[in-house]
Image (cartoon, rainbow, N blue to C red):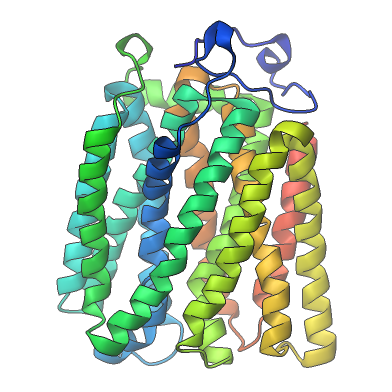
Length: 426
């Protein structure tokens, strides 16, 4: 476990230091920074993939769910996705402080229990409203797991080494997420859409057992913080006074919001516009492959080039790709480009998320020390809430074209660039 270091003067003044990289601070003492073992990376990837798997497995089933409940149109079924994001945002604000007070393991077990209950409720839902309620519970449970897993990683690593670990976990959980649409399609075609939610409940149970057996507590008693509302509020205000932290909050909100917008609208775009059924898992597979390659490359490059430079370049590319794509698609194809062209644009563009999220998170958490759980809550919840908001906007802007999605991605890149420049993060 890392020793707590005094905050440098630049951070005390509300500014982030500006080295070429973030530095790697671990618990290795004189022997050097601690390196993450493969088993730890796999377990953190499994925790991080819980919410992504539970989102992606449902996307191929949205049409069957709508048919099962007699829902018409492409808009309403998207709330089976957006409700989960809303639950994630609520839990991210709660379970981070809980983990700072009582430890990481109890918080993980609470999240797992809620996720299991939500999966069972969704699988047995007698109406669409009950299904949405179950999805909210799933989001509440799995969103907290992601936050606490980041806090566990921050307990052991920081700076560029943490960015490397986050990138490695992203690379691994991409393989898990790739299978989610395949499972969803298989459930719909050969069983029943309710099995989609039953599978997520079984996943929660299996991961709980794994975590209980493999992961010890990482937050010592002397570093636990009170959980009174006033203390939590003071902690949040202290974090937002740090300029680098506030900039990271804004940038992550924009970046994750755009990514969540794609997830909530994927069935409408890929299924509704392009008519993909069995091709939907293949499309997700191509996107996941790009994401995995970029995440792995980031894990190799971040300690050499630095998280700041990589993040700045990725944000610029996102802005150019989103706005440029929207302009070309509107001018040449009336907003509906050929599927191959659209996928050639979408895969590499979304893959940049593999650089952005992990690096922005690491830069935001680096000055936080033993407040990592609460800081992770603020960073993750801001992105998820923005995802719900932008997803709802996407539902209203839906016009049968890909232009709203491309425009939101481009705007997110611009906002991220502006925020990180203002916060002197990169």
